Amino acid sequence: MTRPFHVLLIDDNATDLLLATEAFLELDATVGVDTFASGQHALDHLRATPQDALPDVIILDINMPVLNGFDVLSQLKDDPALQLIPVVMLSTSDYLGDVTRAYSMHASSYLIKSRSFTEFVQQVDAFLVYWRSVILARQADSPQ
Image (cartoon, rainbow, N blue to C red):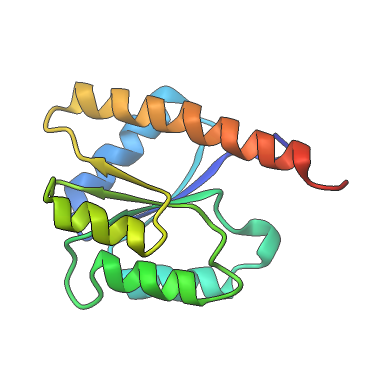
């Protein structure tokens, strides 16, 4: 990759943000992880970020106050500068309606949070392997 893999994580739960950051760092300390506890703060940050510094992928919790994950996803997909960033919904909800809604709103993936840290680290590892390969393939296909 031309730059370190960069993830933006949006979750209102401080413990979940800390655990996710620890999981990424445990697997690969070169991964850049920006965390936001509010959808609005994340959107403000993204809108102020130069195009070449946007994250490779966004991980987005559904159940958040003020702007929930679906509200944030909608705003991301409505913004021409942000709409192509892959968004992975990460939730404790396995409700089929949430999954269907996420995909109908053009989420790239939907992950159900594992209850144990060990299993969550395995999820993060699979996430990294998959999304790095996608980003590398995208870079290989783009004109130099």
